[in-house]
Amino acid sequence: MSRVLISASPHLLGPATTRRIMLDVILALTPACVASVVIFGPLSAAVIALSVIAAVGAEYLTRRLLKRDNTIGDLSAVVTGLLLAMNLPANVHALWMGPLGSVIAIVVVKQLFGGIGMNFANPAIAGRIVLTLSFTAYMSQWPVPLAWLGNAGADAATFATPLAKGAVQPDLLSLLLGVRGGCLGETCAVALLAGGIYLMIRRVITPLIPAVYIGTTVLLTWAFGDDPLRQLLSGGLLLGALFMATDYTTSPSTNRGRVIFALGCGLFTAVIRHFGSLPEGVSFSILLMNIATPMIDRYIIRKPFGTRRKGAAK
Image (cartoon, rainbow, N blue to C red; front, side, top):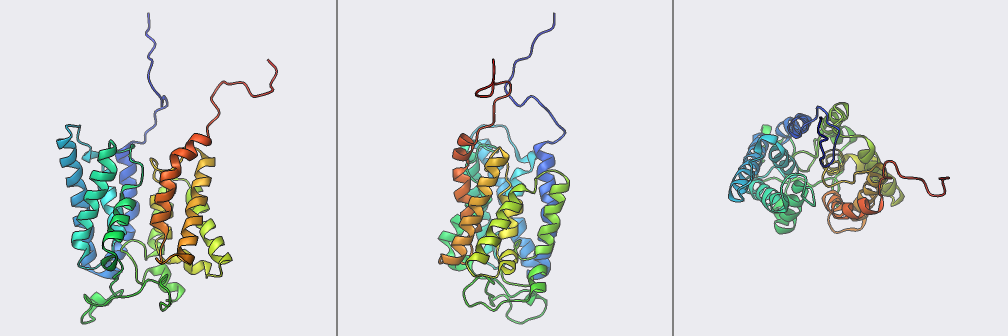
């Protein structure tokens, strides 16, 4: 007599594993990492390496202290460290801010809530926001692009982000290639788009959230009288829409919910950019909608399989 196996969902298994998905994200971020080293110099590589090492080390030690199975093999800590580094400026302060942000992201936002799949917000975004609010001056010092190739005093020079009020606006080609002020992973639009397309081809993400998020931001900034193309290519919109707003754990589980989530991200980003005191609003917008995700999932409920439609004949 065969036994019936009773277990919790999901009941459909596929070839995707957490490790494979995280490896795809790492590969997708590689062009942006390479671009950051080319644009801002070897210091970028050091910031990335230290952030990743700190994230992996924090996850290992926290799991040991909490007496839980170690999860560094799933590569999620590596992705958190990479994403945090992509949200940092390439200055000397990032050498200690990166590890600090990684520890906050892993320990406070991820592990204290139970680990991967249980965090209420994207850990890298939360880490960046803590650093931005705590060390605002350091987090807004961007080195001059390509200055490391021979410009004397490049380490001390700073360059404004194109979103800053009154900043000199680079041409569109410079915005595409990343020759502008900004964080490590947000400047080169070509590298970010290449990584996003790779994730879509690999079916790690779908175009829904990025398309609605970017489209909402562009339309609203145009309505506010700003240049929508420059708003698209400046700041961290592409990095946030492609790599952070699409996080499985902190985004809604239904397509309708994802549309609402992305609309909210776009609305908050456009409003903060135009009316706020800070030039950028991507991280704050995604965090706000991460917090709203449980409520979205509660009210945008899937129809239970096998139930009878209201008004249908019995």
